[in-house]
Length: 90
Image 1 (tube, rainbow, N blue to C red):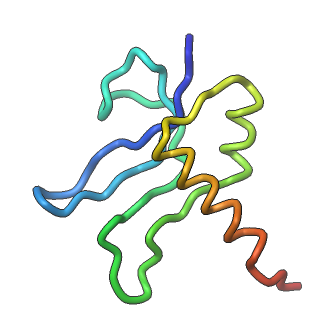
Image 2: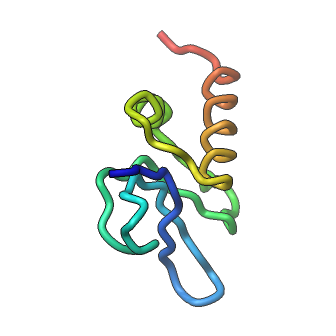
């Protein structure tokens, strides 16, 4: 069982919204998944965040052998960078 961290498409025509999911590589793109790690809205406007990803869970899935697709890997890298740059609140 090979696991992939990839994007699952949703939303309406010409306005996509993606979920970042962990799924078996043999499943369809929008099919069954193991866990949802977050979401990505490429057309986010205003104060809506473009993406929200649980980096700790992504790290767990990497530790058990999951491989990220190119786009999902880039989003996780951006999320990790933003998490490091964010101020720590007590």
